[in-house]
Image 1: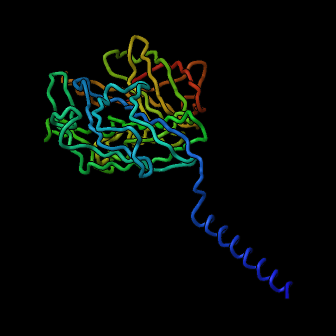
Image 2: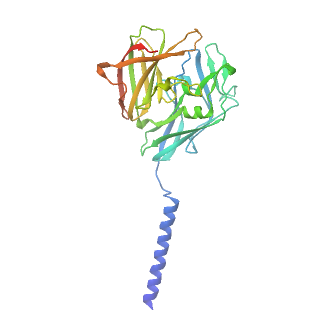
Image 3: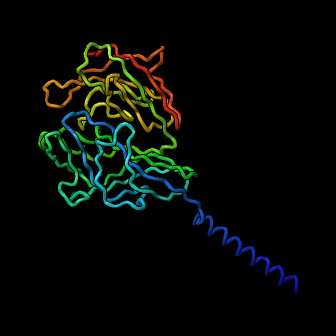
Length: 315
């Protein structure tokens, strides 16, 4: 009799433990550790010299659906955030994992100071050209990691060259179509990224043109990249780009995830002296000491330095 009671008690205890275990498995571990990540925004260059600012007003920033802590409506001059410069937006606590979405919600009514327009290109003549997106919610599908570390820095790279397009019907500029706008933004954790910097000695015989360096994932470049896509963007699959500046044509390609890259150079010329540079052709280039510009390895937290000779403008 006593044995039967003990047996039933043990069976009930096993059922309770088993039920609790199943509940934990189905609901996930509610005590999962989270790690802080600071969220920054940066920019790739725009080609036209008549542009002195590109102002975007952001009402909300979300990482995988969760809003960034401490973020308030902010107007950012993206044009000032080039060559690795960033602006802190806020921070967020997330579990160590791989994430795949960032959402930027644009304010379309007024900037952070209450002025209109909220989003605009500012020209060198101080004209404000209003920018209108097809949808004020920009969903960026870009994979990025949050490490089990206190040093996470999530970089949102808003590439102006791809996201702002020529629009004669809107005084010259506007946001690109929604799909192009969303694909022009990429996200990377700085912990996983490296940099390519360099100088480009110009032996093309033309010192008046503008030189732009483009970074492509190895094997992803083809001749069709030289042509405008449906949105009017050339080199649309470049990971990032940099305008060569100064006497030594310095360039910098920032926040590149680990891997092999190709570096290509293109020449632009202001044919009408209107501040708008037109594509003039690819540039034949070679790396110093036989360095292969089509196979540049980048590792996290390192900077690769290149010395490049620009030989001739092709086409």
